[in-house]
Structures are given as structure tokens and as C-alpha cells.
Amino acid sequence: MIELCKLPYDYSALEPVISARAMQIHHEKHHAAYVKKANGLAAKAGLEELSVEDLVCEAKARGDTKLYNNAAQVWNHGFLWQSMTGDSLKPVGALAKAVDGRFGNLAALKAKFVEEGVGHFGSGWVWLVAQDDRLEVVSTHDAADFLDRPGVMPLLVCDVWEHAYYLDHQNDREGFLKSWLDGLANWQFASVQFEAAQSGEPGYAYPHLAHAHA
Ligand code: FE
Image (tube, rainbow, N blue to C red; front, side):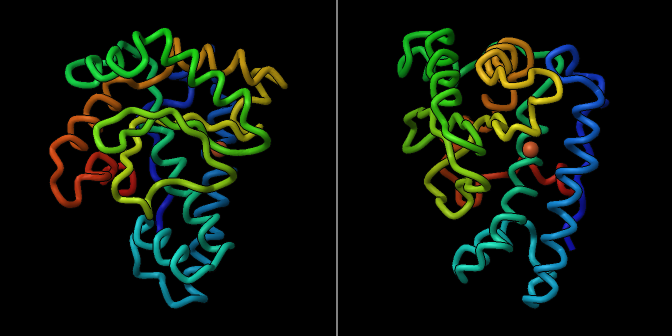
């Protein structure tokens, strides 16, 4: 059984970029619905004992699209909650150097992230990932993530499904992305993820999320 993870902050912690009402609906309605559906489908498939990470990979391997979509959305939202903070600072340590090396500076990375999100057609996710120590900004459609690609380490994600921003920003995805990057992006979390990726230890991929699914 997968459980709905708790948020690492109050619903109002991300205001004014994301209102408490929007956060509550996102967590208690959208995220919770994915958890409920994933559990129902996992039980039917005899996979109810798996962790959410293993469930995503097993569903992908079996070609079970419904289970994959719901389980991946459970994981993606857990990662999203960690990717945001009301106390956003700047990248530190190795990540700060990598950002400057790859994009020139943080402003250029943000511009690339916004461009990727605005250019992404339909629902999905915009990610900062590390692949072989190289930073990339990429988007994925619908529920797709990188759990089945161990060489790709997600550092940060922003939800660009309309349910993530429509209540507060209506159709202004660009404005949402800009204010999200300037006000909410959890660079401290991304920095820790990046250093874990660089350690190259087996199983490094998601150590910081254990508490998110406790
Ligand atoms: Fe969402």
C-alpha cells in the first residue's frame, strides 16, 4: 500500500506564488486521487507490497499504462513537494559550480527552464536533472519521469499540469514558472540531490525522499 505523503510545510507556506487553497486541492484531491487509483490497480495486479518506486518501474516493464501513470504521478508529486520551499535560496557547492559551467549563471538556467515549460505542449513536468554529471533542463509528458532510468538523477521538478497553477495564475504558465523559480525552487534540496548523484553510489537516486513516503 502506498500512502499519501505529508507535505514538508503548511499549505500556506508557498504563498503568494501558490495559495493555500491551491496547495490543499493539489495535495488532498489530485495527489490523493493518484494514490487511491494506484493502490487499487496495484492490488488487482498483485503488486500491493511494492514501494512506489518499484511499482513505477514494474508497471513500466509490464506495459501497464494505467498503473504506471497513477504510480508515477504519486512519486512525481512527492518529489514536487520537496522541490519547493518558502525559504528559497540559491544553489550551493557543487551544484552552484555546475550551473555556472553548464548555463553561465543561475539566471540563464531559469530562462531555459521557463522556455522549456512554456514550450511544453499539454500536461507534464519540467525537470532539472543530472546525467553523467551534466545538468539538463528537460520536460516530460503526462506522468513520465526518470525512475526507470537510473543514470538520470532528478534534482528539481515543476508541475505544469494546469491543476498546478490555474487557480492562482489562470493561463499564465510563463508567469507561474518565473515566480516559481524566483520564489519557491528548493535549490538546497537540488544541491543535496546533485551531490548524491555525484557520489555514484548504488541506490543513490532517491535517498532523500524516504521520509516523503513514510
Ligand atoms: Fe500536480
